[in-house]
Length: 147
Image 1 (spheres, rainbow, N blue to C red):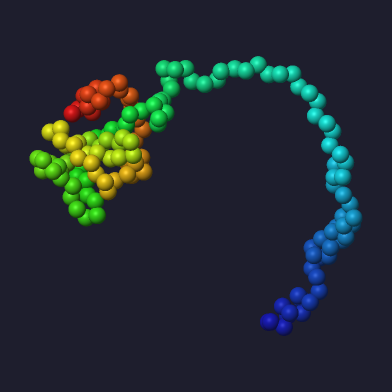
Image 2 (image 1 turned 135 degrees about the vertical axis):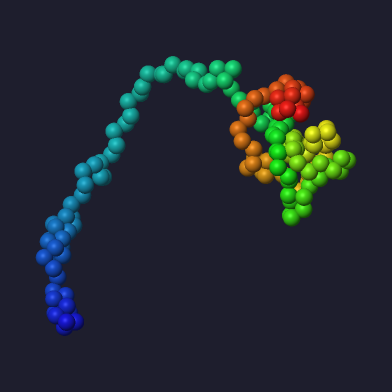
């Protein structure tokens, strides 16, 4: 059986022979447009500048325009296998997580705040959803989130 396969494979197939013929004919041909200098572009009329940016009421404030961001976090916060609890009242769930000036702060339901150095803004951005509102004051934001 292997002898038959080897005998058949000695010469090129019909497809290989046809490809070799076509390749040999195209060997010295150059595609059209190669080696020809490009035409100089024609000057165009100036286009009117249109303000296509969103209207002010639909714009989202940029990062440098915000004092911080805040989200609610109802489940316990576990970092490195350790449950995070409020240093003053011992609460361990139903947090507000604040991100401001590249710092993360945890605020319990009782209003105690503590900085959490094991979290960073990258963690906050990964775990927070899109902002659903912006507020002028911290208290307005607390009311919006039910605290």
